[in-house]
Image 1: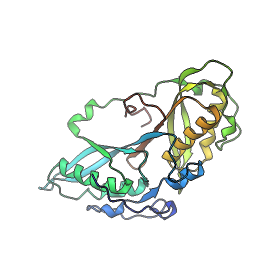
Image 2: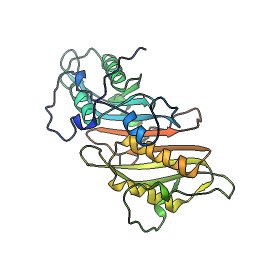
Image 3: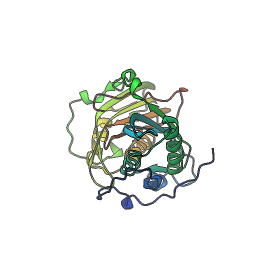
Image 4: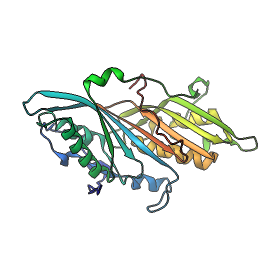
Length: 285
C-alpha cells in the first residue's frame, strides 16, 4: 500500500484547548498530524538513526457511528494499531472530531467505513495502520483484565519530586541477571498542550540486572507534573530505563484511561515474543 503522508504541524496549532465546531458529515481534513521526531530528538534519538525499540500504539475508539443508506444509525467500536516507526502521531482531539464527522454520513456498510478509516488514518500517521471494528453483537465477548506483574505500588515510599528524574533509576549489576515484570497504576502525566491530566497503568518487563524498585516507582511518580503526549511518555520511560539500568531485554506498555471516547496504549520493546501485547481493557478504562 502506498501511503500519502499528511504534513505534520506544531502541537500548539492543534484543536486542543480551543473551541471546536463538531462537524457531523465526513471530513478527513480534520485529522491533525504531529511529527514524532521532535520529541524523540529530546531523547537523543536523532533523525535517521536506528531506534532502540520497535512497537505499536493501540487506539480504542468507543464512540463510532454512521448512517446506512436508508438513514438508520449504526454503532461500533474501533481498534487502530499504529506502528511506532510511523513518522507521525495524530492529535487526539482532531481524531475525535474526525470520527464524529461520520455521525450523519451515509455509508453502504461497515466495510465502507473501514476503508475510509484505513485510508485516512494511514495518511495521517504516515504509515499503513491496522483497523478492526467491533460490532454490537460482539460487545459481549470483550473482556477486562489488569496488567500482569509485581505491583510496585505496594512499596511504602516517600516522594517529594514530581518531575521524571532518570538519576533515580539503578540496577544491581554486581548480582546475577533476573527476569521481572513490574506494574504500577500510579502513572499520571499531563497533556503537552492543555495541561489536562492523563491517567494510566504501566507494565515494565525486563531481563538484566535487578532494577531498584523504590527508585523506579519514584521515577514513574515523577511524571505527575510532566507534560507530554502518551506515546512520548512511554518512549521516555523506555529510553531512560535502557540507558540507566542497561537491561538485555526491555518492554514498556502503558494503558491510559480514555478521553473523548478514545484511549491510547503505547508499547515499546527491544525484543520479540512473536505476538503483540493484549488489547484488554483494565478496570479504569
